[in-house]
Length: 371
Picture 1 (cartoon, rainbow, N blue to C red):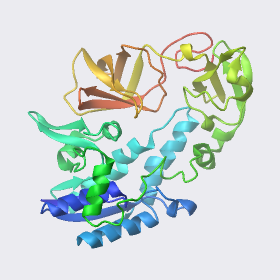
Picture 2: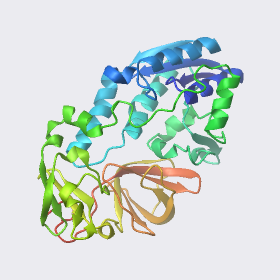
Picture 3: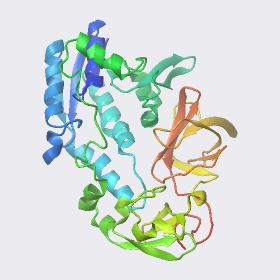
Picture 4: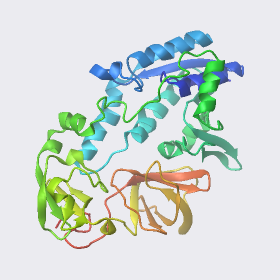
């Protein structure tokens, strides 16, 4: 086949290109230039800027394949960075890697692949695409520690049918690096990307504050029962479940406090004891299904955070409202803006973005905001 490979300049996408080329496919490399600001262009472990573009080009030269660099800075800014900052401004916790896959990478690169007459798009993601009886299925990677299927739930069924994941069956990262060394790729020992690619300092709140200054405005830290326990230096510093950075509000008497909700309109951080955080129900919107949407209630497993093990739950799809409602077997702490991804064993069924908890208690109303 003629295959377009998304090459970020890292070892994973480089090995994906190398293995496909070695297998006899006609490989075309494409690198998206997504941002280029200051230290990010040379920071070790970044992607899609500066040295990484040069690394991708060097790998393409080594393999003897054509390589294109596409300027998608404006697109990335609008679809990912602005969305990231806007989510914090609404009191949510964004998940930019999903947005990037959903828009810039898969939507744009699939279109490019088709324009170039390619039969498929390949990436270095750790996930597996399996041809099932009813069409392509997205499954977890063979290496559970590296599995990235959680970040790919928003891939459409049409995109999945067009996409390949050459690393999905690899047993671990050491095996991938060994393949890079065997192929003679200079990136064999290159460090993995860390944190969020467009936040070179790792301090999210600073990046957010530059784009949405209101997220750095101070406000009150209040208990679930409405008592004011302290002050904060900006909502952009907090997410649901967090226990650090609360200062004098970190304890109520002898009991440790954790962030229970963020009240953006009133710039309040709502805190409570850990026992008050888990929710018995969760709701997700912007749902993408990789199967025909089920009718009625059904059993599945769900991940509410990327590094979690999928846990049993009961789900129901409300097609009229466009909402996925789930009741975990064990209550969970949910952060609005993060992803809920459903699994049936190793297979990804679909997922969506978490909405505010619909639970009323103490000084918090039905939207999780201090009353």
